[in-house]
Image 1 (cartoon, rainbow, N blue to C red):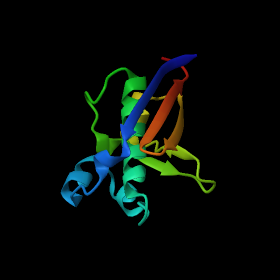
Image 2: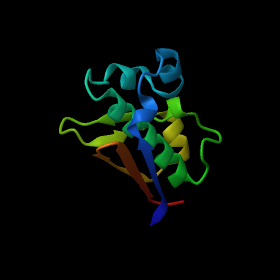
Image 3: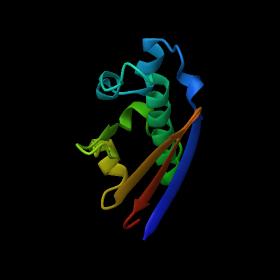
Amino acid sequence: MVRGIGIDIVENVRFKGKEEAFLRRIFTDSELSGAPSLSKEEYFSSRFASKEAFVKALGTGFSGITAREVEIAEDDAGKPYIVRNEKIESLVKEGKIFLSISHEHSYSVAMVVIDGKS
């Protein structure tokens, strides 16, 4: 059973030249260290869109959860996923979380589907 679907789109230029202090309020240490030297704006935009899509799929927005509590990672094949930390487990106990990210020129988009029991 689909519990929620969320989608978000971000203009990549939104993250151009952002100070590290700003980025640290949104991204985890792992996300910050994983940023490529090229295409940083695209990288951060896609991760931010993923976080937004996740909280939209929850139906709560960033109420009771912060952007830093939602960590986006990639498996060995490059497939993105949401890290199942303690906070995520408390919100999506038995459900599966599906994440898809795409980029096109100036924009990054992410879609999240939460599947499982409510």
